[in-house]
Length: 318
Image 1 (tube, rainbow, N blue to C red):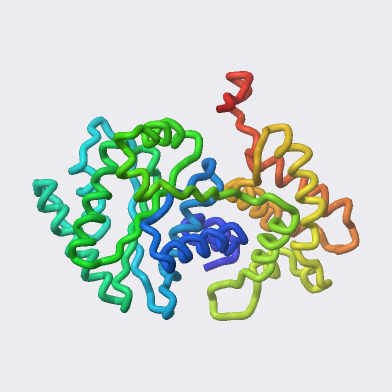
Image 2 (cartoon, one colour):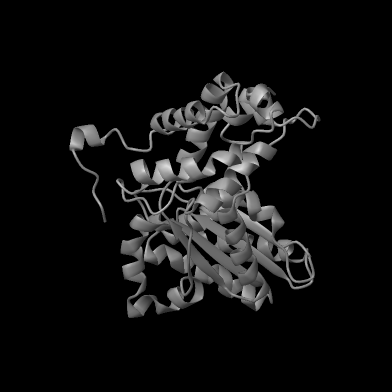
């Protein structure tokens, strides 16, 4: 695979970030302390799903034994039933759903999760539910049923919900009602916020991951080395532009648009443009004016400011 294809293939390209590391530590802390789960919220396009899917195979108990975590996600549907929840989980676990009843699906799910929990001495297993803001409060009772059935089987199950912050607020208000205390205190008692890049230091760490990203051809060559060999051979590294990159983003996009953090979707798009399209024209590491101009052009081409504003004249703030 060419260096360009590696960066362009969004389904495979991923860099470890400080934000993903913090999220991994938080989920593992929940698992190792016996928590029944939590809800992870953040604005759209920050990289929540990508980070979560990458860390699923890295979680373990205090003895270092792997804890299986099963992932599924939900979408907007015309009908909001408990069976629909069970059917989605069962498919994620590999079942042929067909016309099975909710009770049959629940039985299949719990047996499958119980089997997976045997992989570690603490009998732990976990579910990770993405796009949880699209579920109704009634549907969340399905997860309480799964949890209760596993308790009877002496299986320790944790369930983590991931939601877009703005869309989750109506469901959060519903969960605060007394009749939903049962579900709320099991899975929504603890709230974990997920952010994009919030500082120059975090940006430098992410840029450094680009510097370290290797081709998958078995060689030791870095992707950045292939795109701008002259700069690379002069000892120039992408992380060195973090001060200007961060300052320019904050002054021209972050603050004017009211963004609390630099989302990974926009960061990756801007940095890919920088690496693939602009820096190859730079041959002198001391030509800071040209390199900074490349950053400016890359951020402009990343689509950080929504073009829909040109039609509506404003972005609605919640």
